[in-house]
Image (cartoon, rainbow, N blue to C red):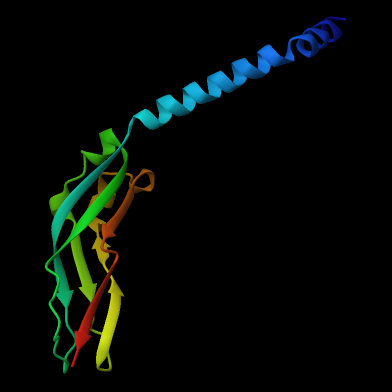
Length: 131
């Protein structure tokens, strides 16, 4: 008997129940994402050149690392341990070659959970003309 009573109450007040649920969901999302932040750091970029070829375009010297995630975790990172590099050592012909900027953060795996963070570079790809 109680089940029927509660079910009939829900059917008569379904609009209010739905609005309460949507409000609670919106409040949860607002609180969850209020702690997220973004940090941008300009860092030196190491360019590894191939043997037997000479770069005739300018070599990039730095790239920007963008870290997104919870503010508490972002500022726990020791960014001096990050290493950025672009490895052109596999280039085997003249012309324009493009490689992604790689991030070496192996040391950080010991003290920070990187699965909650998003780490990427800007630019993501480096292009150099070789002769």
